[in-house]
Length: 226
Image (cartoon, rainbow, N blue to C red):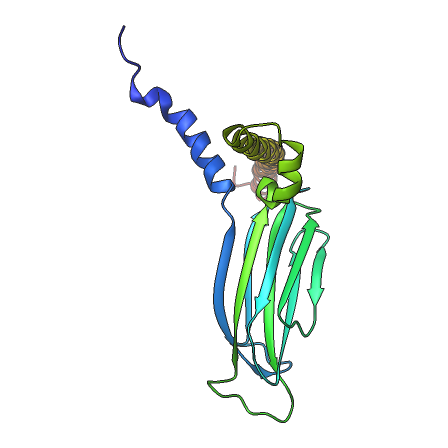
């Protein structure tokens, strides 16, 4: 029996790689200086990710110590409805958030570090922030997921997680497929309109040329030039 060529494993390998990447959680740590309220420059930072519709998003924001500073967190998307998912003013310590997306859109997590009035900005006026963000199957509570599957082995539980991730990938691919179909229909409709406009333009030019020939013939006949 001949061994199967390695290229036959490429589709399966790609699917497994996508599943593994989708299951990863994001954790970002950064420092944010404090500036006067209303001045969004270096004290304002936004992180974004494109997330599909009806996807569970769970995360947390941890704010380090900082005197005379007020940290605000806003989470929203840039979809057609401009949905706002989370807002927290003057955050101290640790806060968690969870929501389900309402549209296929870019979701933004924006953090602003404001300096209290009466204080001047300085290099020491800054805060360390830790942002974690999980989406889809990875955003589920581990405890509740394991309780539902406590009769399974660890490998089987992990396979269940990967199955959920694969379902999300399939849903996303279906959305992209429908989006591609809409774009194709739009292109075909545009091409049909352009073709109709081109034919109308050509017919107009032909009629205009015929009218010019007729007019010149009548003109030259009247002048007895022909």
